[in-house]
Image 1 (tube, rainbow, N blue to C red):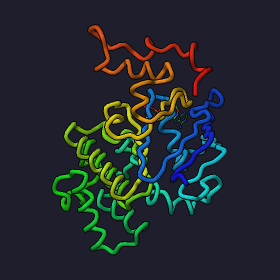
Image 2: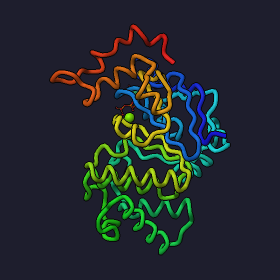
Image 3: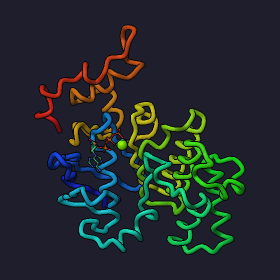
Image 4: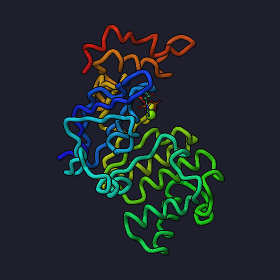
Length: 283
Ligand SMILES: Nc1ncnc2c1ncn2[C@@H]1O[C@H](COP(=O)(O)OP(=O)(O)OP(=O)(O)O)[C@@H](O)[C@H]1O
Ligand SMILES: [Mg+2]
């Protein structure tokens, strides 16, 4: 049984100009211990589809699916109270906007310790010990001291690391990492990716990695989904995707990588891909 299985997910936002379909029939599956990468240009519905799975979209979003099952539990029609038990514990997400997802009114120590208190019921001393361990694991210097800081006292990269520490605090069965390393410099990026991969192998954690970085995809993913305008263009194991991409869009995405560029400037996806030609025949 897959850890997460989604069939035919559709997300429509009510906007002032009418309904807007941000996700249009996406299906996916992730097993325990598996890494699924989701790639695709900005606005292709990567974040929205995963926020829908987490049940975290605003009320303006209409979410429908034929199936949405996590760890044997039906997420469709699940009560908000039941969802709150799962979210942040067994299924958690590293959000793309780390600063916006931290509460400015509380210290980062309080925020991580709350997760440990609510989901694991740890006492004060155990919470503090675990919070320090987690801060250490994500490369926050002077962790004991840092716990007393408010988000605004930390840099963007440090807030991102706090977010990551919160997301992995309860050893989730499934972690959705939405551009987890974009605000970080290269050495920290590597440390975080190594940490996520270690959790994935040691705890058989399922990992959904949303990223623009095809190098990260090549290094971490077992399978890749390529999304374009809310639709799945292609799904393949990582080797086949790089060696023999099937859709024109994936070929364009790969051709736009710096290492594949010819001449003195990078082509844009727009120059490489004509949607009118291929979207209809997409996967
Ligand atoms: N609350 C909302 N109301 C209306 N439209 C929204 C809302 N949130 C997202 N969208 C729209 O849904 C589409 C998909 O957005 P999404 O954030 O999933 O893109 P993405 O693939 O994650 O892009 P990026 O790579 O830039 O993070 C975009 O056109 C976006 O503007
Ligand atoms: Mg996004």
